[in-house]
Length: 183
Length: 258
Figure (cartoon, helix red, strand yellow):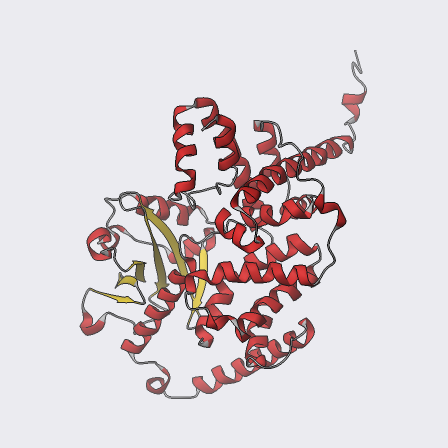
C-alpha cells in the first residue's frame, strides 16, 4: 500500500477510531495507544486486505480485539443481558441530550456496562452497520440488536440521573426562595 | 411482524439514511409507515440517536495523533516493534522539520521544476478521490455545516445537474462546517449525496482553483470522465473551484448528474 493511500486511510478513520477507543478505555492515553496500535497492525499486516471498502470494518474490529487482549474481563458483564428495555422516550429526554456537552455524553456512555457499551458506541459513531458490528464482536445479529436495545435503556437511565443531579445542584434564586416577599 | 418485533429490529437502524437500503429493515419500516404509533416511536428514537451521535462526533481526537500514526508507520517499515506515543510524537516532530526543509528547498527551485505536470496532477487527484470513495463504501459520516447540508439537499434532487447548477463558496463552506481532506497540501471539501431514483451514493469533491492553478481537463475540454478500480468519476471546474464527482462505476454519472 502506498503512503498516500495509507494517509487517506488514517485521515478517513483515525478520529472515529479514537472516539471508539475512548468509549472503551475511559482514558485518553490508552485510547491513543489503541489507535496507534491498530494502524501499526494495518501497516504491517492489513495491506493484504484486497477490498479497500472493508478497511473500515477491519480497523474497528482490530481495535476492539486489541482492547480485549489488553484488559481483564469485567466480571459484571455476564449477568445483565436480561435487563428490560427502556420506556418510551419523551420530547424532554431528546431535548436534554442537546443541552449537555459532548464530554458528559461520553462519560455517561462509560456508565453503560461494557457488554452493551461496545456495540452502542459503534452504533452511535455511525461507522458500522449492525451486521458489521456483529462481525466485529463475533456475535449473532439478534444479539447485537438486543444489546443495542438494552444499552440504549441504560444510557437513557444515566441521562435521566444526570438531569436529576443537575437539578438538585441548582441553588434557587433568592427571590424564588422568598415566596411572597414584599407583599 | 408485531409492533414490538419491529421496535426490536429498528433499534439497530442508524440515524440518517445509512441503513436505508438494508432489506433486514424493510418489513419493520413498512410497518412503521402503516402504524402511526410505531412511526412516532421511531421518529423519537431517531431524533434521540441523532442527538447522541452528534454529541459523540464533537469529541476531538488529540492534536498530533494523526501525525504520530503516520510517522510511526513510516518508521516501522512493517518490521519494527510497536512504537510508544512519545517516540512516535518525536518522529512526527522530525517529520515536520523534514517537511519544512523540503518546502524551503522547493521554493528555491525554478517554478517549472516544482510544478507537477498537469495531466499527472489530475491523475493523482483521480486516484485520491477513488481511494476515498472506495474506503467509504457508502456515505461518509460526520458533522456537516449549513452550507454542506444545503448542497447535500440540492444534490439529492434527481433533477439537479452538477455542472450547470452547483456553485460553491469554498471558504464559506469550510467555515460553516464540512468534511475536509487534504490533497497535495491543500484543503479538499467533500459532500456525499444519494439520488433517490437510483438509491446510489455519490461523492462530490471540491478544490480551490487558486490552490491548483494548473489543473485542468485534458486538452482543455470542459470536463473529463473516467473509471478507476470500479469507481466512475467526472471532473470539471468553474471560475473558482475544481469539482470531481465519484460514484459506482456502473452508474452513468455523466448521464445522471450532468
